[in-house]
Amino acid sequence: MDPKELRDWIDSLTDDIEFLYDGVFGSICPISRTDISVSYGDYEKTHDSIDAAMRDPFIKGASLNEISNKIEIQ
Image 1: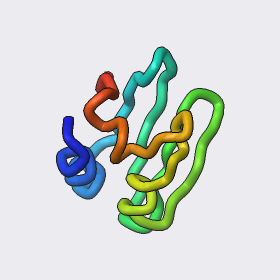
Image 2: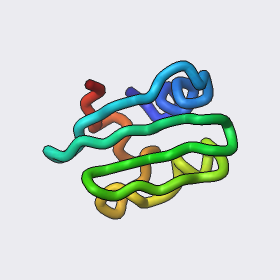
Image 3: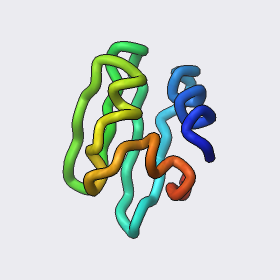
């Protein structure tokens, strides 16, 4: 999935998105467009915008923009 597709899915606010990346489970929980929770393994971080969630190098030093085409949607 390319970064724009993932961003659009988050922006739709319809589902939590569960994924596997590098053998570790994670999730993206879009509560609202100003409250996006991203978890990966035992860690979780909340962002105040979709763009901030997409840019944050939270997952093993990489952002969702960088790894979107490498994650396995569950």
